[in-house]
Length: 622
Image (cartoon, rainbow, N blue to C red; front, side, top):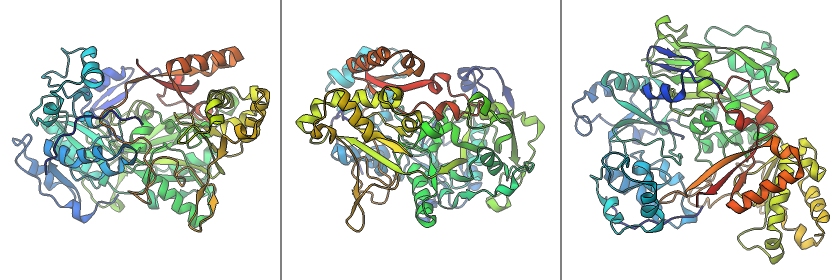
């Protein structure tokens, strides 16, 4: 969460990688080759739109004024909004948040800005997060020069680079569409296809690569898209087990969920982030007596619409019990680059428990196309077999989308996610900040060792695998987030005893978090999203907190995965990895093991390196 302050300037008012591309089917092609031909090239992570934001006539001036934007506008729903945007929008709407004190900043303040252009790192508005003017995307400039400009010795010209609306390095879209319904997305994709335009896609913009922003594109900002989550929870009727999947796939999500020995699902819209999803689940739990758990990201401003398709590391939401984000998907609804509005999911599967998997192996994925894509009323949508000339291989598409990156294969308009049974929540905190005692500071390295062993080598602490898998940890040395039965405090006391550290003051360095409820009583929150574990929510009460505050530019770092098999070989290997990570200043992220291996349906493109990892670690590249 460190911030590299920029200058202050004045503000103006697996093994295969298939894809579907237009009418061509690419099988056994590389992701890079497929992506080169895709019409949809940018990716975002992010509802019923408000009337105030909705009405907007399509401008005929601005970017690509030679095109018939009025024709696109005529096909949009009354609640969609197509607008021209400019550099002034970026500076006027987005810059002010970066002048707020660092620990009070939040992406919540950026998501709903009218232009839809804000990004979590200010410099992401320029190519390669580098505002030095360049006519060719910095191809003739070196990494050393970037480090000098951004970190070591920023030149005095930076202020003028940032203030220049004609800077060729600017990487901002000039036309933004806020779709409200799927027909708006269909219209936009068809318009882009007919006119040779690239499309970029954004939900909340919480992408630290700036993948949801690209110049000379039509940006689809999905933030105002229909909200399904508040009423999207379905409790499946077990009596349908053994039924045939209907032709329109309407019962497919529940049939697959029941085959996984689960009984509930939630439908999430293409514009909803985890703040909206978590609040929907919390509301249902408060009404029905805490029965649901959803696997998701650590920040409310992260979205299933980016997080999931890249894998989805759920270090705070029981991923080690229930699997990665890609493992939660039951059915997908998308608009493909050929303009087809499709929904698809597994329709044939088989038991894989003999091989150690906790979910069925997907054998066949089927899909349908909407035959009336211009219909605005969802209750009148008609789903039928896709025309043969569309040549869509839904097996390949399902494989590619789940792990092959968001936005690359089409625009996701909704997804059914698996819900799990609610389990007790136990958040633990090691007193590293803000005011650690002398005793706690002295044993911080021992806590890092304890956490590594509890997560990745529990037998060394006499901890069962089941208790270990109940816990995870984001890339912060202070937190242990447990969901389900665990024995963290007992193991911590045993660990200190083995290391001759029985001082009660040291044992107390690790403690369960509690917060004051509405009656003034201190208690452990019911779940991760209910607890204020990160940041300051005073500016946006009622929202699930953001995790990393926006900054001018991101830290330069690399990441690596440590295989679980290496740690299993010996305790010496565990010590070696810990010492190596410490020497690199690396911070482990524990979201691997257990369900991330056994929860795969064996029909997704997330790498085995992720499946078989003990943890991921990030380190500064210096």
